[in-house]
Image 1 (tube, rainbow, N blue to C red):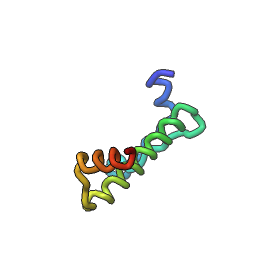
Image 2 (spheres, one colour):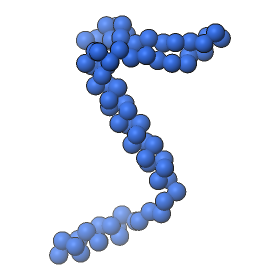
Image 3 (cartoon, rainbow, N blue to C red):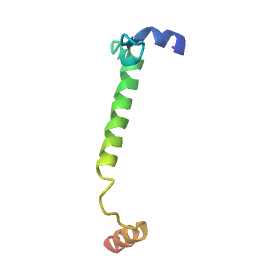
Length: 72
């Protein structure tokens, strides 16, 4: 399926000023459904990462040394 035929399954909604406010995806189409599922996964991962942005971090060398110590 090419991009032209996929565009049949996507609708754009605009407000009275012509500003894009919504995109509708026809989830009956398998390719669109799979794309949507991956997009939502990526969005959730991004939101999780953003929520943890203020958390303390551990240097990779420290993590590596800890893992090596546990394996020994």
